Every structure is written in C-alpha cells, then in structure tokens.
Length: 68
Image (cartoon, rainbow, N blue to C red; front, side, top):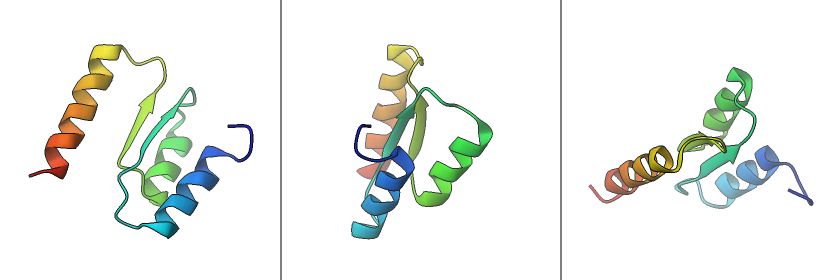
C-alpha cells in the first residue's frame, strides 16, 4: 500500500468500526504477521498465493458465518 502499512490501516478500520469484518491478504505469512492481524481484529488472513478456489471457499464461509 503506497500511503500506509496494512496493519496500520487495519487498526484504523477497527477503531472506526469494531464490528467490521476485515479480510487481510498478504504475501507475508509469518506466524507473527498472522497473529498481529488477528490481535488487531482481522476476521481472516489469506495469503495472496492461495489458490482461487480456496479463497472463494474461505470467503463463502465467512459470508455464511456473518448471516447466520
């Protein structure tokens, strides 16, 4: 992201709306990055190199969870 780091954006989103559903996509998949995302409020963390079908399944699951 050219203006700010993703974690900074996530933190601002969650401060604005603590009920926001945020899906983080990143090429970084270190345990620390995933844990930090979850601690800041991310609902999902998806690596950018995840196969499209798997991403679709994860997003469909998230949508199903939201509307249950």
